[in-house]
Image (cartoon, rainbow, N blue to C red):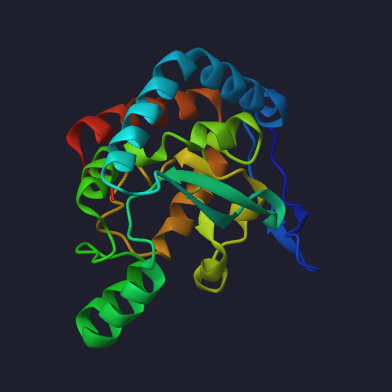
Length: 229
């Protein structure tokens, strides 16, 4: 049964601030409140015999190239909680310095970064990292983040702490960020950072088991096409 409300939901975003988020139609309430989390855990456990060996294999390739295989970065989670997101390393260690030097020397790249918070030609990415990013295999360690409850299989793209000021929507803070999501399977290489919020609002409104299954299926095609970023 679908519930409709014009009330607002007060959300504690985790840094001495509460925000009012308009309540929207909420189909499949049981799935929102408990089923989604149960689905996440079952999916991770069932897929572990495939995900764990793949992750270890890619980590070994990175290690053989003299690279520390895992990268941990603080990201903004549900209710504004900061958590440590794990990825396979795809960038050089001094990535922040390399990025700043590149943006300072390239005004066009600066405009692209300010608009999208990402670069098509990113000087920070290592050679094997390009393969991992295009195939989205660098995301595999995030199955651990899903298992411990920091993330969900499907949700908003995990936001970096420094990006909060650029993000125009408050709906993000209601949900766990996802390994995949509506934005991730859409025009992510061609959309601005601000447009991510539109996808997140749409996902929140349509959130259901059917929506998540559809996005996960579309994720498979994104991986096969190699259109990750």
